[in-house]
Image (cartoon, rainbow, N blue to C red):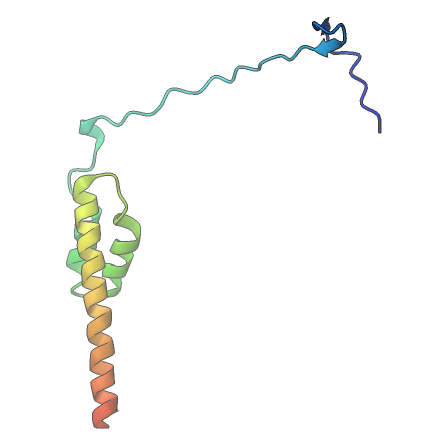
Length: 106
């Protein structure tokens, strides 16, 4: 396969050999989306996961996974609280299970 650059415009360089001219393609970027303070959620969803985590600890894990890295400060706070509670729950479960196996009650 031979590249034929005959459609490119060329200009002579200082050494006399033709040099290809290149064209720049400008890509317009859309304007960034700016979230106004009035459109932010007033109550963090991660706080709901924290509250319902006392009924079902799986909600703490879900709240930690989906809300810990949020850019909203209150959402991130409650997401980190969910992360802490999920780690505490997992550690307590492991300790309880280990003690039960060690005493022969399971």
